[in-house]
Length: 257
Ligand code: FPP
Image 1 (cartoon, rainbow, N blue to C red):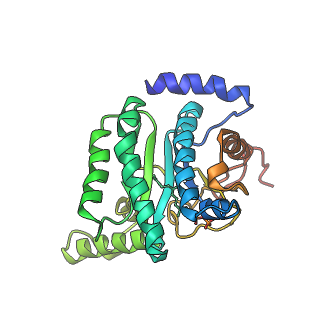
Image 2: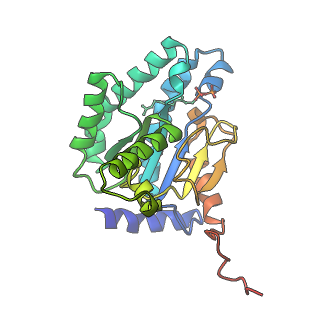
């Protein structure tokens, strides 16, 4: 199935002049609240519309042959929002997993959840674990939901794991390398993002995938998330395909003199 999707994707992609597709796209879905407020609607309406966009983004990522799509759905700092908004976001996540899981399995989508599991509501935790388990056999798009996620929190948890291994005598501090750190992050089984998109006009990372973003390309869209349709997604992909990724080296056409 994966090979077929990729083969078809090459065809549909060349139609819009897309010559290379990022393997892993990560998106900061920003601008929901402002989108709603500018229409005289409650901020929560923006989040509700955001779920519609999310579903379309998953389908579009599959169409383009993207292998990993990470979506920042709730940060470890979002708990400081008004209780009513936090509860609404929790309810949306529950409803999404509950209502969409069958459809995701049918579409061969594997769900992964990253973020801290500490102090999470038991039933929500069960639901998220269940989504991972029930889609573990899927071989198509990997949909990574960053929930209760903060990069610094992830990093602290990783440092604690490494320190415990040093304390237990399993590892020498001087032998710790980048791979050891990566292996202790929530994303240990995922490739680094190639493209990080932020919608809604702000240009910052907001504690998202700080370690993993080392060589990512960035794309900031003015479009608020509820309006980030497949055309806007394609604009981000086209911008990516025109970037010259050098990873600290020189481009292939540089002479070196
Ligand atoms: C940022 O917009 C967005 C969020 C904090 C939540 C994003 C959540 C969803 C799109 C839906 C829930 C997720 C799932 C997986 C079902 P903002 O509120 O900060 O917007 P603003 O900057 O305009 O205030």
